[in-house]
Image (cartoon, rainbow, N blue to C red; front, side, top):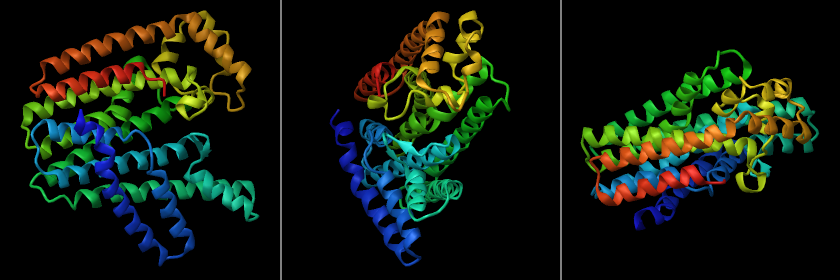
Length: 348
């Protein structure tokens, strides 16, 4: 476990140096652009550093010796995560993350304080959020290009593939919520695997493995394990999105209900009379806590919440069987097995 515990420290210097370099470059192009990069640097700080942990765990446990390349790749995967969060906030119309203004919110607030109207300020914030995410997506490949390893091209390919899948999942997710794309159970499951599992779990594990020189059998096994881990993680995330507390999750438990977010939790509830009685409240942008409580009660009464818990338990067991059968060292096996529990049981 020592490799995993030390992961944040091992990537901070890479992230810090790269972002400091970009902030300095931006300063010559004007104060607003410098603020954009400074806020990008701020947005990249903190967090669990899950993706770097997975890159370094796979690399180290599989016998990798190229610590510099592994740390650079781990930092790149963390920037990818930040980029997607920035875009996600814009797509969801969110101006706050973990109780504080996010990047878009900070620019919108600054504009309002300077006298700009609310609509124009919100547009300025959204534009800043989109451009910030775009810049970090480019930065991901810029960082990967600094890897001095024969596996560099393979890392680029894994990153590209994961982003390709994540965008497909995000596109479907928005389409489901708006009613632009029909949402059935199979489609929701596919969206979950694409949106979360591909870049948050499968890609980091595969990147660490390829930098360690692992072969195609290990790569395929980690692809399967990462996809299953991501599915378990997203199932719990959807539960927390409705039943979690803002103090723990960092986001309001009204957001998914206001957006009309189509999750398996909602899909399982929809056929039941308890849900149909309150379905008109789902997706209401003005939804307040009293009506949200009615939706939560309907989800519980329908049995959907219990069904999701059973599915989490089933998928966790299946993931552990996949881990047990994988051609990987015992140390990595133990870390991944422990991660299953954290994904399934977390409250934040």
